[in-house]
Image (tube, rainbow, N blue to C red):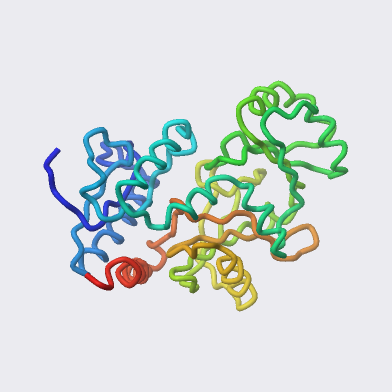
Length: 304
């Protein structure tokens, strides 16, 4: 690999570096990475796009790495975690390393709840827990339950079930809990009806929003499962909620996506906070790529 130096390395998944097959999913990904790259280059920065696990890349040759479409990290976490810890000694990270590490694990939801952020009723089950899933679900007294890992993405090992169905998942639960922490949540009945709202923020300030809706008969809003994405006009209450969540993050992220739903009491609740490699739907507001680039220049290259 040529020994070139870069101001920013935009990180992707090896499958999406130069994909031969380009369905709408891949095309959207490439288009949004292009918008970010061009916005950075217009500000005089030297930029490359590269997969995070490239075997020949010397990360000392890039001043910063920007996580964009590293969408295999949660399936390859035993590889990704040590890579992350090693590379943070060689280059700067956008967002900062400490906030990436914190956001990798959904224990952060409990921390934000302790600060007064409304989240769906949640119980985290640590790896090695001996209690059965049936017991834990019965103790929750919830009418319907979601089970998923604390490190996950794209609805990996996410299950929706009634308490009486917990025994059917016992084998899967036992295999997972031996290796990783899991969480159970009370199912929020508004999600299939109202969907999930995602607010994009740069420098802690709101930029734009979208609405994700599950296909009929499903609860998962991800497009992997037939979910759809729609333009959305966030109201002042939703914007205030998102900005308050980010104000509790230390260090403060340069870019973020705050996913929120309406809970079973019809109140706004944080479903997920995406600070590592969130899809930011620049295609719905291309000028938002310029907002991100401005934040990066101001924070990282102001003295250059």
